[in-house]
Each structure stands twice: as structure tokens, then as C-alpha cells.
Amino acid sequence: DVKVTQSSRYLVKRTGEKVFLECVQDMDHENMFWYRQDPGLGLRLIYFSYDVKMKEKGDIPEGYSVSREKKERFSLILESASTNQTSMYLCASSPGEQGYQPQHFGDGTRLSIL
Amino acid sequence: QKEVEQDPGPLSVPEGAIVSLNCTYSNSAFQYFMWYRQYSRKGPELLMYTYSSGNKEDGRFTAQVDKSSKYISLFIRDSQPSDSATYLCAMRTYSSASKIIFGSGTRLSIRP
Image 1 (cartoon, chains in turn blue, yellow):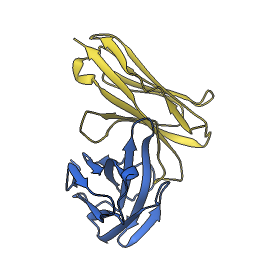
Image 2 (cartoon, each protein chain N blue to C red):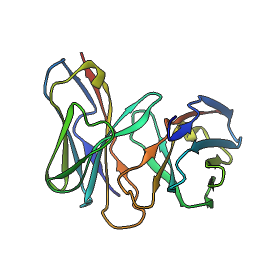
Image 3 (tube, each protein chain N blue to C red):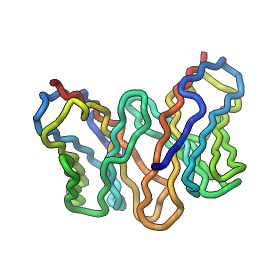
């Protein structure tokens, strides 16, 4: 079974702090994704990466950056946390082959910015 | 207008009932259609996916796609309390493996 592990289930930080969310997958997947999930808005893609050191912006990249130094690890960085970044953050991974390949999700990090 | 519309519910039905969950979409280029189930405090898990139109059955679950109406459905037969969760529809075009559009989810509760 694919295992996507997010380092924290719950996190509380203060406005202006730099926040790191970590995600590790154990299936040697090429693609990794960061989403945020908010009530009524569904999942929205923040960034994704299709290879080590490669990244592309998703739909809502403002205020975020990412890092992928190793294939199995994908980090989301909130450069200067703000209250509107309070949300559930979900990491996912998928293989890089052509055709349909499902995304496998971690259990999420519920982040509160005070 | 959102690309994918899903009724948020909540939907509450008695155990054993047939449940129908639905999504509509606006982009005719969508080719892959997925249903995810998300339990409270967990990440989404893939339930079923279909390519293009038609039906797909897996145990008590049936996924239907009607591309002419831009409408997809998930049916759950003989519903169980363990089916209580939020169900997310999702879809993407053939070429865009990274760009999956999710519905906002329908919260389902099965009463014993």
C-alpha cells in the first residue's frame, strides 16, 4: 500500500511566522502535490512537483513556496503566515507514467494561524 | 461558475437505503472521473474512477458518467453506517495528469 505521511496532524502558529509542512511518500512516485481544503471550496491545488527540484504553481500559489530536494519528500513553506492560511493541508503523490494514475493522499495537517 | 458543482448536503439516510450522490461539470474536455471518500480527520481515498462515459460497478458501489449531460453519479446499495463520510467527485482532462478538479464534497450520514 502507498503510504503518504504528513509530519504533523495539528499545528498552531502565529501571524508572520515561517511555517514548514513536510510530506514523505514511500512508493518512489514522481509526482507530488500540495492542496488546501476549505469548507465549501473543495480541494485547491497550491503547488505540484513532477521531479526532484522541479515545481509548478497550482491554482493558489500566493503566499506559499515548496521544496523538493529528494524524490520522497515534498515540503510546503508559508513564508509569512497569515490568518487566511488557516486550513487543512493535504499532500498527495502519484506515479509519473502516462494514462490514469490515481493520487494517494496523506491524512492532512490542520493548521491554525493565530 | 465553478467547473465542478456538488451539493454539500448533509444527506442522511437509513441503513440499507440506496444512496445517490451527484456532480455536474462545465468542461466538456474532462475524460477521467473519480470518486473519493473522506472519513473525518483522514485524507481522501480513491473509491472508483471511470474513463469517458458509461457505468462501472465495484461491489455495492456504481459510478455513472453521462457526458452528454455533463453529469456523474455514485450509487451506494445496501448502505451501511460505515459508509458515513464525505464523498468528493473529481475529474480531469486526458492530458493534464496534475490538474484534477475536485467538487466540494457531499457529507453523507447513514442512520443505523
